[in-house]
Amino acid sequence: MADAPKLLRWETLTKGQFDGLDRERAVVLVTCSPLEVHGPHLPLGADVLEGEGLAERMLRFLPERHRERTFLKLPCIYAASDPVPQAGSISFRPSTTIAVLEDLGRSLAAQGFKNVCVSNFHGSPRHFLAIEVACDRVARERGISMLCIFSALLSRLNGGGSELGDVLGHLPGVTKADFDGDTHGGLVETSQLLALHPDWVDPQYKALPRRDVELWLQERGEARPKAQRGKLAAFGDMLASFRAGIRFFSEETYSGSPGRASAELGEQILDTLAGHAGQLVGELLDGELPEAQWHSPLWKLRRVFTNPVAVRLANAWLRVPRTLS
Image (cartoon, rainbow, N blue to C red):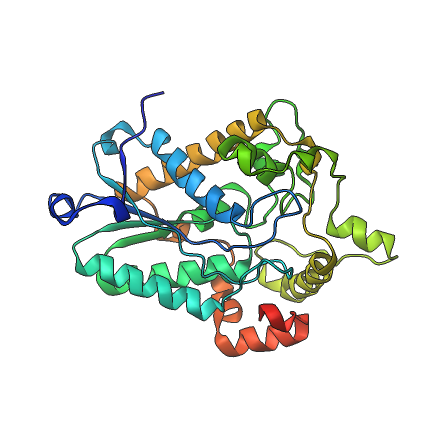
């Protein structure tokens, strides 16, 4: 594999260096993910670190024709909604995420940048749809390409769900079933953090048992509603599923099997996801990514998930803790 293109950190550039950039061909990368609790073993910035790791790893898989471009990495944005309701998580309204990213996109467009990629590794629909709304508004208003990589991957790889068994089940040493219920601080995220920042992972992760919402509900004699991914007809089931998740994460801090994680698996997961992301971004830079593939399968429900009034009503119905709403 060829070396990755050079990545420049925005905050380290001098005025002279910045003025020398070819902004029209440059690609700006920014990660928008929350600071939130990920089990007792992962850093609070797990989603940020994974989003940045995915974006940087993606550069290794870009088509050769785009490797001479300048890639600029902005500091992370942690304005994100729906973290797990535990002390240590920081929550923002979806409208705040939209406003921040809209302002960012407009500022970049005004300075002559044509390509902006927003990375993320937080699976809340209200969060990634907020990113999509901001990207869509700026792209239409300013005539630039502004893409939520996470949402485009959801659409292309697994139909909009947060489980990755269909995408990663072929990797050595794991099966598709190993990823069932693995949505937060489990096998996938622990493995990625072991690959990216092993010193920030508590070694006690190896002793953590499998936990997930369905197991937790079964222990209480309850059944979890079955929501179909990305389907309008399943909206009621999705809300019921979200409520169950909030109850679960009010008591538990991870979902999945972190004890089975390894740095080797993390490298394979990163390469798999970054390979798909590199293909997507290559198509975007070529002007060949169909508009329908810029969005997650839940795009048609964006107003339900991001409208401020709908958000307040949903928070009340879902019984979101006030400290996080």
